[in-house]
Length: 225
Length: 225
DNA sequence: CTAATAGTGTCTCTTAGACACTATAAA
DNA sequence: TTTATAGTGTCTAAGAGACACTATTAG
Image 1 (cartoon, helix red, strand yellow):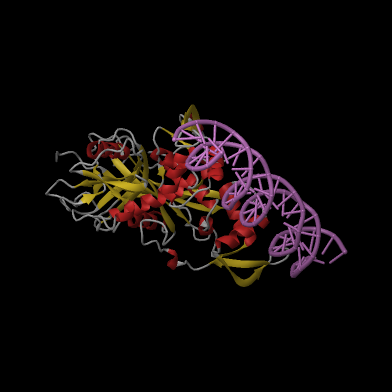
Image 2: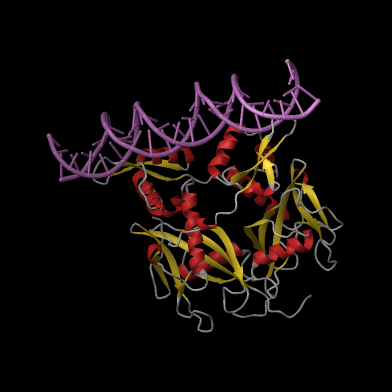
């Protein structure tokens, strides 16, 4: 039973998304270890789980974002786990994939080892990273249509028109201003700062994210009602 | 960098669900290894990934279901990965969790090492399995409200009323027959066998699942439209 | 004043729930 | 004919899109 097979590799990869002048961009990191596959290639930022340092895989993801992109505390959510014998030449591996969203004004600048790439222009990435990226985009677009997820791509405060633009850029199509306002009101995640901001016409109300409603997590039972 | 830390454990746990006379039940396996934690306790069926045998983690899940429940090819989908230093006393571990659905007429009978437990009656499970079970139920209920997922809990053929009952049991509430028929028609996943079946009144049309539309998987680009 | 952008009123079309009504079998 | 279950027609209320109209600033 307990043969001397090498243990499977366990890593974390992160799809880091932001909006760079109106287009969704993904953060890519250049692989710096000559001993590893795809040396010098641009891939999703990732790294091996370090049991001694990381409390859990989400910790690994945060460490990776800190080390490769200098990011402190972006919105972060688990996506799915990609595994198998074939996806990495070093052997059987599993990558717990996360996606993260950051507003443009917090997004780190490019360096020799980090850059932003327009997702529309990304043709293929090493490993199965294209597939991971595709899954992340699908998830983000799907959650965008019924949630406040894209708020995390917007700056700290914004006008309704700016936020609508963010949604439009994620979804790739125009949204009706009336319907958008209604939907945001229902979600009940915004609050007006009271400030006004003008962009050449009538000044718009400025909003920010409401503080999280932590009490919403009830559900102590496994069965409904 | 490459210290002699023990590698993290990589395992798969499966939330196996079926309907036993009108109630959602989860399949539990008794832990048989005296050297492992929770010996003799009932837990979600699971097992270590075996790189030599398993092509990927889904393979592991299928092997676990085959070995612990004698199941051939149930509906199987990845749920999420649960990881951390604290969840297993043997050390840092990651469990890639799946959920599986089987119709009652295919569900294996109980043995000394396998049994069905009404999810409404499950109070707590070893490890973080309660949390995994809760996440699976949440996912299944949520997908039920907009998809054909519960079809996989129904027998090979069924009347509309029977299928509606399955949905009601998963969701825990009554559904309007008219609306249910409309929704099923829109989903376009059923076909009438032509057969009729009586349960004391007017005989009902018998349906079965349409063969999967494999061509539906298009989306070659990362961007919409 | 005009131009530009913000924000609202409201009409309509679609969808979803409710529920009564018809249909078809067994006893 | 009665009873039981299947299945349909259709009314209505709520939701979502469309779009015109009002509001408020700059220049």
